[in-house]
Amino acid sequence: MKHLLPYLGVGLAALCISNPVTADDAVIGYIKTINEQTTISESAGPIKASLGSPIHVGNVIKTDENGSAGLTLKDNTILSIGPNTELKIEGYQFEPQQDKLQLNANLLKGTLHYISGVIAKLKPEAVTVKTPTGVIAVRGTRFLVKIEE
Image 1 (cartoon, rainbow, N blue to C red):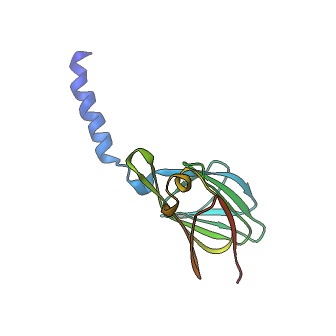
Image 2 (cartoon, rainbow, N blue to C red):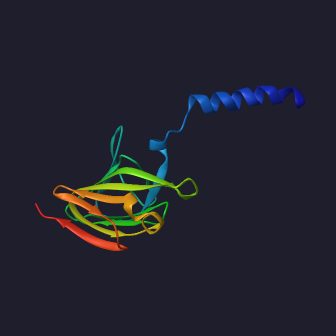
């Protein structure tokens, strides 16, 4: 077995080098509730969302006219979206030990019910939600926003 250890180390190193994980690939949360048609945009195109679908930075979560979805992020932030909604997660960092805290979302259309997680409690200025007409800076623990067409 001793003579195999150098080869195992090389194989593991090659595996790590050939399949690097970037910050954008990291899972930041999951779909926890879902109703009707909801999709998540990925680099390869939209995929049908289901319970437990992972959420990454850069994803756009879309619901149809009867849809709704609830997302829970790693810091326990809860984002609930209603029918005809598009929500893009533009930035997310949750490393409290290194003081790397950030949540930037963009509500392109529809409705969003936001409930603060750890990021907003530790560093409220690190959380923003953009809308077509302005930016919401989070200072409380929950809010509801609706964009009318």
